[in-house]
Length: 141
Image 1 (cartoon, one colour):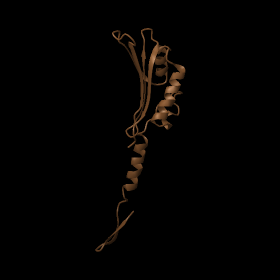
Image 2: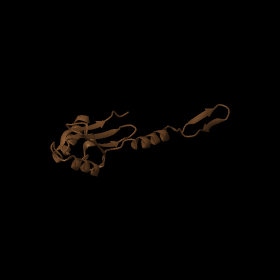
Image 3: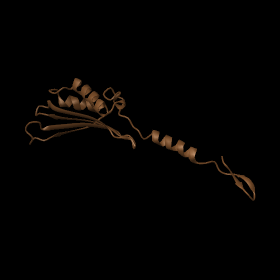
Image 4: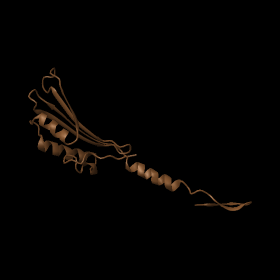
């Protein structure tokens, strides 16, 4: 609390300053702005990594279970079980790899967004032929 001296009436009490409450409120609000990736075996520890290291960890974990030549249906089921939203599109006009699949999960916070994307292409038999993995950790404000 601060005291203000009034030359006519003498010292008077004023209301407490709002700054400490503002700082506390802002701290509480900001703590809820950072969301993390799911705490499943695929994503465990990835949030502590940077962009390149996080991508490398995710890629290694996916490729160990679903290397090129493996079933894309198995990969899609696995990604769903790990908390990712998936989509699979079949385009018969594309001769080489008509199947495109994607798994995506956000740890979207207002200040430190995080995202993991796993994409694959498969041939007519559903065999994975290409794989792309990305962990993105946008710059925190």
